Length: 392
Image 1 (tube, one colour):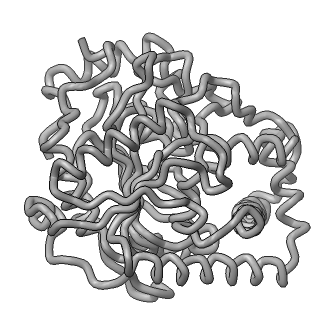
Image 2: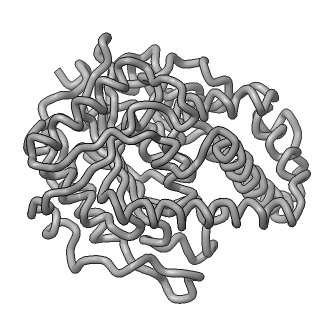
Image 3: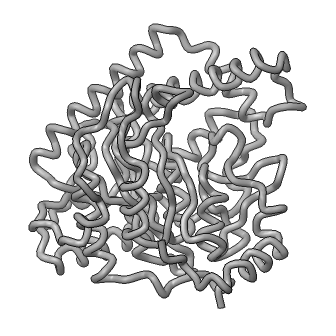
């Protein structure tokens, strides 16, 4: 792949970035156990947004996003169980594709992560590099419990062809009916105008209808997601206990992690199975909805990138911290639950110059269409020359 910056500049940019304390010691990559939509670990300190060091990179793949956005590397690994590719991509002005569930194997240690919520890919600066890396990694491994729908011979080659004229649903409010931040709303409206200019049909759609849920079902979805999220942490920590005989304690785990571990242990087997049923039902409903619309567009985040410290990773108040993460990212976990592909594109900036991503969601298994659309948008409204001042 062509680097995002000339090779001769990469080492200099890395030195400047680390010397500025934007990633202390260059070691912080994810929050503890990848649980947060911000990357602020107690062990290494916060990863700071290259666009404004007072703001978060997002999470959980915040260190990867900071490294790409600062010009240290052209792309970096990221994973996504509730927005952890798309949230940092939006926060740092990058392309972030969450592939279809099981598009790439996460074996051999696991058959699925977080009850099927988690997938693996990258953050990058271009649709081209995102598609090329999917060509390199997509496909099942022997013994995987399920496989994604068939894929094209090459996502990269396919993405060079513009899609047919699409019917696109534009979502301008949160799923609970509350308003979005004005900058995020403007970003989605701008994305709709680009798509209209490319010849696509845009319909403004009520998110309650688009997501097939009212406030009560949305709350049920949040509770089901939480059950899978918390119990998956229990299995991770219990595996470490089995290998090391260490005991979870405030000296070994952050307060939020420890509190979530205890909450996960309280989830029953029946509640876990009910959570899976809720997710699967939502996936079926969205598959039916996509018989009408090819793609949905919505904000990746409900607000511009938050300042560091707004989401407190050291708080034992699970409800408050988890609630802030849902408020920041009101749509992203939905696609982890349904298994659909979704991509965040860096199409807009806030009034104070922070990146704002727009999320495009496709049918289950159809990354090909998303990448075709994304590359045509990239040509119509390019972002390749937009970067943080640290590059200058």
